[in-house]
Amino acid sequence: MRKQAVAEPRPATDNRGASYGGGRIIMAIFWVFAVYATYTSFSDYVTYSEQPIGPRLISVVAAAGYVLASIAITHNGRRMRMMGWTALLIELAGVLTGGLMGVGVADIGAIRNLWAGFGAAYYYLPLILPIVGLTWIWFTNPRRIVEIAESFDRK
Image 1 (cartoon, helix red, strand yellow):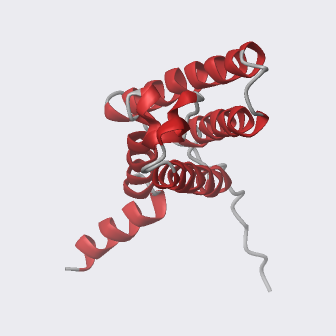
Image 2 (cartoon, helix red, strand yellow):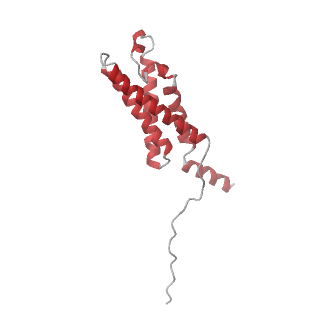
Image 3 (cartoon, rainbow, N blue to C red):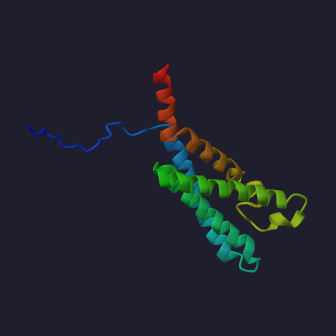
């Protein structure tokens, strides 16, 4: 019996170039907003120490969520995508809950908060960005893209 030579496995290489365009713009917007929200939430936390701690702490947590979402959108790995889905869904639920709780309450906007008034103090970006981020994560999912490409190949 003759031994067959087994070919050495070669490491997979990705020869695709870097992507420039809409994805980079979305990443930049998320990072700029994450830095801005983090800065303002920490400065408001320290500056307005006489106000209740709850809304100030919620703002800090929401800013941390935007940092996590920015990391997840920038890095396109499977675990990061799950972290991005989680962070963005929490952000969307928080801004919707905070906005709905404040409907009809006049004093709720007195304390600056990322989620209060549907994010009105931040030009409604806390309401818009999670939707944009979730849409981006959905449409750039590598598995979904491969499934769509394979469905075209079968036809």
